[in-house]
Amino acid sequence: MSKKVDIIGGGVIGLVLGLSLARSTVDSETDYQIDIIEKEGTVGSQSSSVAGYGIRTVYRHPINLYLAQKGLQFWSHLGEPSDTGFRRNGYLFLTNETETSRTLRREQNRQVSNGFPAELREPAEPTEFTTESIATYRSGLFSPISAVSDSTRSIEKVRQLCESEGVSIRTGEEVVALADEGTRCRVETTQSSEHADTVVNASGVWADEVAQLIGETVPVEPSERKLAVLDRTVDPDMPLIVDIDTGFYMLPGHDNTLYAGGDFDHGGADESYRSLLKRYGSETYDRLSDATVEAVRTGYYTMTPSKVPVIEQTGNVIHVCGFSGHGFMQAPGAATVARRMILSNERNIIKEELLSSNRELSLTDIQF
Ligand SMILES: Cc1cc2nc3c(=O)[nH]c(=O)nc-3n(C[C@H](O)[C@H](O)[C@H](O)COP(=O)(O)OP(=O)(O)OC[C@H]3O[C@@H](n4cnc5c(N)ncnc54)[C@H](O)[C@@H]3O)c2cc1C
Image 1 (tube, helix red, strand yellow):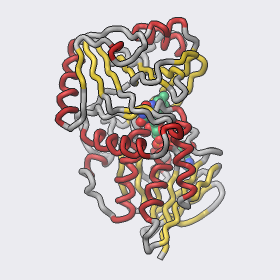
Image 2 (cartoon, rainbow, N blue to C red):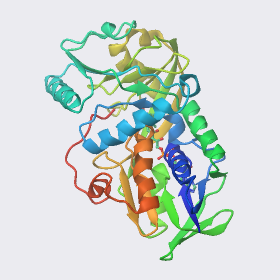
Image 3 (cartoon, protein in one colour):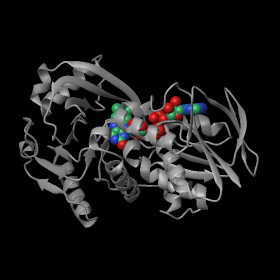
Image 4 (cartoon, rainbow, N blue to C red):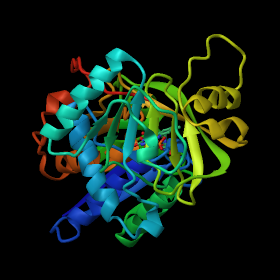
């Protein structure tokens, strides 16, 4: 017997799912053909190439935590750190606000009760965590097991593994029509017309457009985000540092180049992203004031109202989208959930209704 799975989208979600499916079906009696169909000329060229690739465990929502835990396991074992840039530098959340300090205290308790180390400092003197001269804050929460990685290297590693596991990666081909015919789906692309037993919608910020091809909708909204590359090298062990009050964050790249970003309140002013970044960033890291922004990468967070992704099956189509800025760290967990839906019709890995598009969730996570 043979089965075909078409994954629409060759971003980190589609690639990690393709790899996960291929590895799980290698000894199966059923012959699985797994195709990733990507409209761009290369995989991972959209939001997945922009990501800062931080992987954290500090989440309030248990689903985000479950997904991110899977991410830490996967990315830490994917290859040599020199191949992927994976480094367990930790995350340092900082605030000067009284209410946010309380939130950090609660987060520390939650982390510790979930079995993760988390250190609270009041006041927080970041020089304790890095040789860089970072401002002192009222409170800081340090999560030592959180990690940073490198987008280009990690995507390339997963792409290579997909190919060696027999996943077919079809670039420069766009899915333009879909029809669920009951037992299988018809998939029309710019190059072919074919049938698949299961279709996965892993098309990132285009997920609602793709869902509409079969008359469905998913509750996702694009939110433009930027990440800047600066002309500075920094302490290679520096944690990913976030000023929760301004949204500014910074992290060391794989070659120790400083990466920095944030979703700043533009206040209606015509100020360029470069100058906003330097204005807010130098409050945390004064060396930023005389640094040059060499490049600004632009991508999108695919937001859901609750900031928890949607992993939902309708007929033969599974939507895997809405990662709300956490798609790199959550891709392996999402792949586990979607893979089990595909291979064993197993829906109760984590409470299915919490990942469906019509759930009502009240908890939100610290977002930056
Ligand atoms: C500035 C920035 C910083 C970030 N930092 C982090 C971070 O630190 N940690 C983290 O975990 N996440 C981070 N993210 C989020 C992360 O990048 C995304 O969640 C992740 O890349 C989403 O992956 P994806 O595969 O869903 O989407 P994408 O990478 O956008 O992939 C979707 C793919 O689908 C293709 N496609 C769309 N429609 C079709 C079609 N009809 N036919 C064929 N192909 C189609 C697109 O071309 C695209 O390649 C960050 C994002 C940004 C922008």
